[in-house]
Image (cartoon, rainbow, N blue to C red; front, top):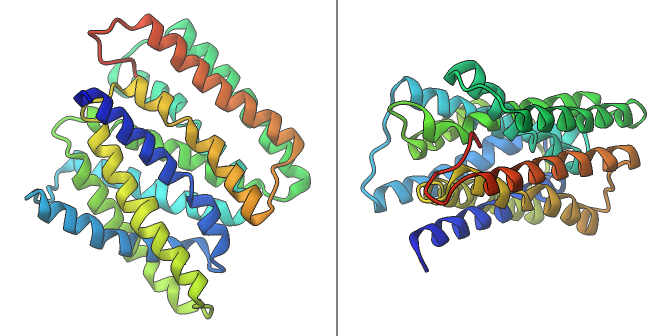
Length: 286
């Protein structure tokens, strides 16, 4: 297996692990802040061991901090959104991240959008609109807004590798530090500490946060961003399926149409972009 194939496999496995987040968060009867504080505290132990094993000392500079804030924002917003809207809504709205990558590339890196970029943005925004129409009766408007904001911060996670003087694994480490410090005080308000709750929490911290982020960081070293974004499309598909099977929470009919538009648009965008990219190039803005 070549280095690029191993990298792509790492990205795929990371996306699979990310997808269990919706189900585990639903199974824990805590607030989103409590869950995120506890799971990132657990993740810090695993990431710390990984850094020690690889002799990698966490760095800190402006761009590492920007990446850390993106990681922290993604963690917190997604956890809270999962408690306020359906897991399907939360993950699909977060999957708008590639579109914000395009917008940030224009605003901060001076890259002019192509017609394909603009068409993808229009389709995704149309799909997102359907989520908010569906939430008017479902009562999940705030959750949908927070999920959409998590998509914005998630775009920053994808851009960590392109930031000058960046160190993605250090950003992940410090992002989890901030998440744990902010979230752990909320544990004082929780009263339910059953075995199932603690098991779900450990699964979140060890696999859905720590191992998944480590795999993603390692995978992006050799995987072009376009390929990584396409492979990550398994997450918004698998996440609501797991929740529907084990938690019996179904996505609304109008939001389901929106989900198909959002996921389909992003995947189609990446397929077309990958075909336009020569084998020697590392990929587009995603």
